[in-house]
Image (cartoon, rainbow, N blue to C red; front, side, top):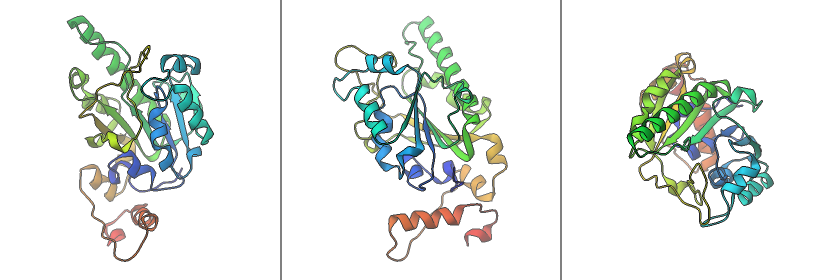
Length: 270
């Protein structure tokens, strides 16, 4: 994988990250019906650099997510494979080191959920405990597959019981540092349907996730060993790049990448 830019530090969203380099390797874990990776695979310079995992077996996922108000999981999986994406089924996101998946510049987990419902006081406690265990386990496990200078992108709802999951505490306790957080813009992912973990019968149900946030984080050790620029950006110092001339978007992205790569002193960006 390419050691490009300050992944979490210089990017604000998934698409801004993956458009920077043709060599970015991206891992999405916990994909239910495949609609999320399918919504951005066209932005990847090389879809073969994308690996998508599902907790379910292929048979179970296709059964849980039939066609309804959107394409079925079977259709989504087929489209991804035709584009060259590698699909891996039966993957536990809390044990990523066991699957020989590779190393990745960006690891994505959108809306992790164990399927334990909220409701009564006892149900709420079970919901909180089970999902905290899932997220903490993922954040510990993901450090075995995220490359140097890589980032993790975790999306969660912010309403109802979700604030009680205490995501900031989970990130710190797992040995990670949060570098950014921002509201998820669903319009950036056309045809992405946020589905129920347990699936549905008949028309597919879309989960309401207005106001959801994406949390960007990196392993403590990676940030501690980084240069001044990454340290500054991780503290929300903003960069402004002014482009003069008729450069194309690709040329601008390349210039920014070369400017930020391996910067260790202020003179590097003067």
